[in-house]
Length: 151
Length: 442
Image (cartoon, rainbow over all chains, first blue to last red; front, side, top):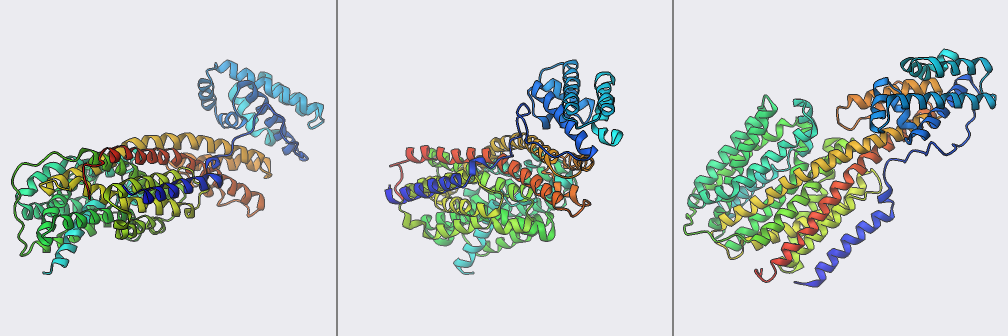
């Protein structure tokens, strides 16, 4: 067997793969989502909509952190009670546990937003009441439509 | 009729039959929609043909060596008739069944063609070179030709065009005398055929998955994708013309396997979702194909008699390799696609949540994006549809570009693992190639 053509083929093959790796070939993947347990960059919240969005996302972060999932995975599961059940099953938790974590996250986020004067007393009381007393399906509806109901 | 014309007609028949193993690749999305089946099912349009060819090749070769002219004629007629049934198939089951029959006809045609070429050229060595080259060109040109036909005339036209073309090749039989070959057939060259199997399995990724990545993954028009993937056959044909300068068949086979592995490895680490990134890997895979397939076919046939039977073994090995490639790579690909679509969905949700569009609009947009994802029915969704009626505002355009980019990243990354697995198959072919050292000197 002639060595030169074989060595040339090896060089071409290794060279191309190395070049593609150098151009970022191994990291061309979906952007990893942020850790919900770490603080996020502060965003300006001026309108009522934006302030309520801040509360809902902070609640999602708190609950996601405690559950060990991403905020986005939790938000996607908030589409319906069925989606939430699927997430609970996937994470090996009971529905009650997931539900309580969500309620705790919302109460905590409402308290923080109230402390930062992002929301007023009445809004905070309404959201806290919803978090503690509404049935889960209705609570999800409130979370999805919080700004339109309270804004 | 001149020998050159006869050779061209027989070569056309071989090319048609072997192109069929990959010709419908670009038509798969249309076939999937036409018969409302999913990706694992639609892959059977390819698998059934290759499996049929792999199983029928050796028996067809044994039949063909006794009456090569009759075998070529019957094979061509069966192939042409089955092609028409494929074009007019009322159900997916009929299409897959007709593909199996097509494969049996193709096997008869291709194996008998080797003895016909020997009768035309009067030389075993030359007939093997022509036979191998016609097979390489057919297999490599298949996806591009199928893509252009699908886009211009519809996927059914692939089969409608084949039928008359196949019948034309029968003109080569007029006045041609091919002697029947008697006597026992020796044992096949196992290392050379094993290497052919592995190389063909690896090439499955380049011929099928690359096309799926371009058309379904990156949403490139099938006709344009057909043009893009011509780099591979062009490189194969060009390399095939100068292959003899690379040395003996062992050197060519080993160098070709390494080039195919390198090209597939590069496709497994694509740094972006532009078709331009596929050009260099395609050139490498094409060059490897041009070097290795013909070299291994020559090694498998060298000094063995009858040629048609050993040719049958090489066809069986090649198409068994395609089947192994399809069965091995399809589940790896679909699993990775599902997993990466989940990751893309999370990355997309993060992009929507963090975007600067009004909060209430986010809700509506998120619902529309999810509706597009759910309506895609296991195909890669086109999230741009969700932005069709949104304001022409920079915030929306930025978010749209981010979502498209996340999806592109997810899809491209999903193809990485099967491409890398295919690269390993090509490298594994070096083992039988090295084992065959010293057994053949061509």
